[in-house]
Image (cartoon, rainbow, N blue to C red; front, top):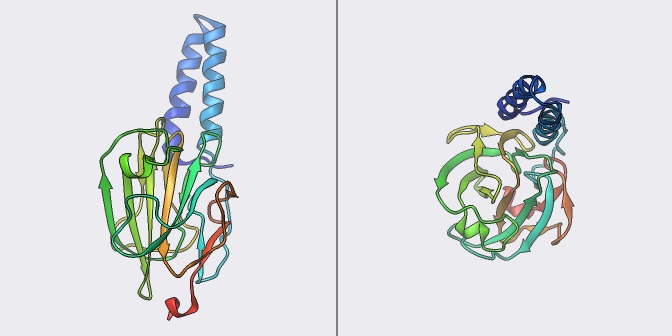
Length: 211
């Protein structure tokens, strides 16, 4: 299984330290090898095939649904439904595009580093907001940091055309993803549901929204 490029410095750096410390203490060396194994696990990037359906909005990340319904806090201007996904440290943290289209807006918002499972973390924590537009329909997603996730990696830019299920970034060590959908979208998930990035369908758009 491949790992995300963001994980190479963690894995290789820890292996170098493990090799060095084995000469001083086998206990420390073994501990560092275990840490390197965790980094390999954390940055794993499994291959997945997205469902090709223009009306479906896919999960952008693995995790557990926290919110599925009206917005619970600060949302983009307009009327929306919101789905929030909490990523634990054991979930795959590679992020995938939930809705293919053109990236029309991308903005970084500084903030705090509260635990991502807190209801107010979406408003107060650091995040990157990305707007995706296709045929006049807009879907907004946010990569939100947590108490452990202090770094957001976003590899798409304004003007890019992306497809549903494409890899576009990663959040390091526990975090949250919010997706804002047109208020007429039909949600297919509920709080506490487990979802898989690029595979699980969060919602279906109304037919007239795709015209």
